[in-house]
Length: 311
Image (cartoon, rainbow, N blue to C red):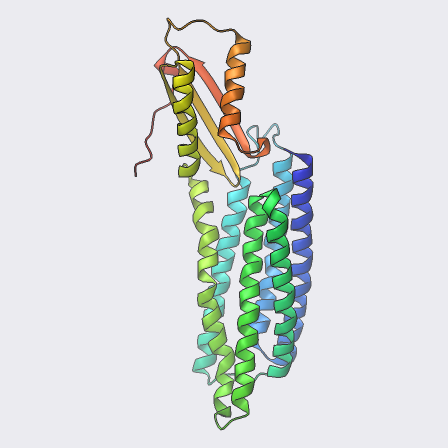
């Protein structure tokens, strides 16, 4: 794995955990001070999210080791596991937020110091937006799967913060009118709306990570390998080939079995290695995001089963 890649990835993840810890502490303090259950819950969520971010950072460091005696094919499978944990954690927070909002509505609402709450929402919105766009910008060239999904959590926080800000402003405006008694329902309503808004980002994390945990073949990788091998068949005159692909996080596991006719003109080991190199270059993907194995055989016995992605 590229040293510069892993160093940059870990710096971004470490910074993300540190900033989230500061946001969580501030949220808990301001939630208690203002009486806003929405801010308090978000502060608790942010504090617990630090644990997930530290797990992601730890996963990045494990993957950087590439292999070990106990994990001879690497630690890549850890990435979908920790991302799945992040998705489950987000859904758990959604459930807690929704339950809190319903409880507030049933109990007749809550008194909230909207001035303090709005002040914190401004701070939280600016900080979350700044760090989200920072991660997105830094990851354009890096293309780290871990950083990408970490930025999704910051996107959720950014939307929550702006939602809180607008809602608190509206609640404060209502307090200045004859509808003032209804302002106490603003906080629980905000909790319900925000909990619903958090569901899609959580699913965007859960779906790919769950599929990778099950070992499902990624269609884009499969089709790219098939295109490259179809061209290689014509160029080198091979009889047949079978490709198998899998993905863990951003790392693509690719295995290609190439069938050669026994009457095919013989090639040296160096020539076969050059063919491997040509196929490798054609498939693409950075070396630290790819585990490629290419086998040559004259017997179908040593070839994997062929699959068509038509489902």
